[in-house]
Image (cartoon, rainbow, N blue to C red; front, side, top):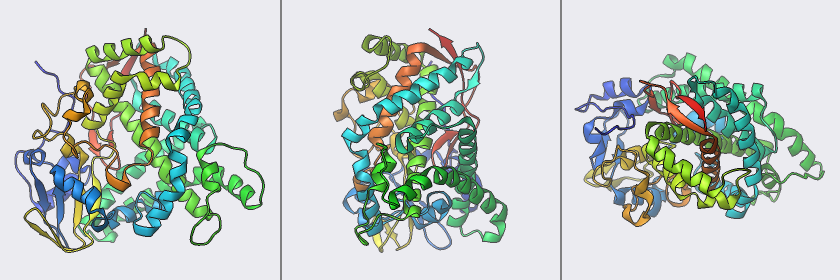
Length: 455
């Protein structure tokens, strides 16, 4: 009998728009129905415009790559994320986005990502010290530690700062609140629910965004002020690269708020998404002991003791496939929000300007027309990339807006997985079922209860 990783079993039939809002208020994945996984394009009727979900490789390529200029980032997404990200590369469009991308690109070139490997290694070493208390024969919520270590990695590589337990707890808790509230508010805005009905939610998510920005601002401000006073910054992190950047429109350094916006975006993208991928990878390995053993054998054959090198990590092909398959089943971001900048036609639908477009890695990654046994965990799918239909696998997006930190996330995740697997077996708590939600990222809101067994 096959054992399938958890996913929300869809309803048999499509529900009304009202029930769609009710179901998706918690997570948009709750509103899917059986045909969502095989449809070529979905359509949800709304009061002011339609919402369209293209689900064919050719349509995905058109919207994210070949005709991307006519399908910019969705304005509702921008409005919802402003309390945390401000005007960052994650939600801006056109010339503003291009200028921000140019600012960030040097920090994420391959050589730069490789150069900060030792910082990632230090974070992994400290993680293992904290995990010692997890090896007490009990089941613990490993998601909390994954959130902490990925936040710590970001602090070290971007800001040259270690994350204190107090700061880490405050940031992680604020992210949980922001995720829940922003998903709810975003859905309500899509369906034009009056703001008067959202007052409590608005206050909570504004406050949670302010907490995270406050922690980041306290670290950035002294270094920013020193650079503006022509003092030397001797750091070699990502913030140092941004502080050296020159605004092509003014010929001057970028203002503090813009630096803070980009760092907040990098923190969200680099911490929250990688925490998600780590938690799901460990869940899958715990669920499939045979794959876990294969990954372990590869790790000890490559580096049985001591610190991993960058070359070690690059040689871990099976562990890399585990990570890729985890991203297929549980993509970092389950939906990419766009809108139509023009009146156009998509398949047989007349799409009005301003209509909402959702491209869903979740649905494409699990579409049975392109994947054999799509809900099954099978790392060997990635043994030969040529077997994967183009434009059906895009955990980091596609086209010019592909995630700038994809190399960073992959390098970090494989290092963390290898570090844990070399020392511990991971075992899932009996009868534990993740409560999966699709919000800003794909997470289990009831955590992930795993026992660490010392090898």
